[in-house]
Image 1 (cartoon, rainbow, N blue to C red):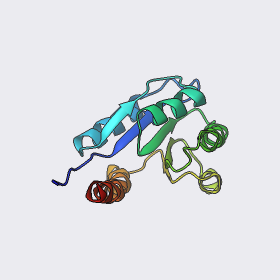
Image 2: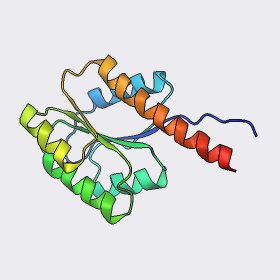
Image 3: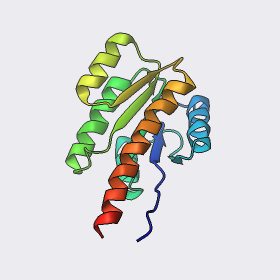
Length: 146
């Protein structure tokens, strides 16, 4: 059987009432240019909409862009909803205006990676390409077992 390659699938979401999405769109373009399949949910998504879309789209990562300062509350709700739905193996990243103190708290909640404003494109790509390698290895094992 021929080995297939599967691109990393990322759900990029703007939860809550945050209406600024220029940064999210720039990151989406960056990831797409690197071969990542990005599903962008658009603005003002609820926790239920985000988790439902992630499950339906069978994504490898959920990436939240939050500039409104509600990253802790929304992240807790996302992680709880993922557990409720049995989808808590999907890693979640958060980007936005986030203090160092809040980064530690987000990690405690279970957020896989935090990208505060000013994160370099290189650091963003490095994380997602590392995740892509994990997914590729996992998918190749599934193909070889068939």
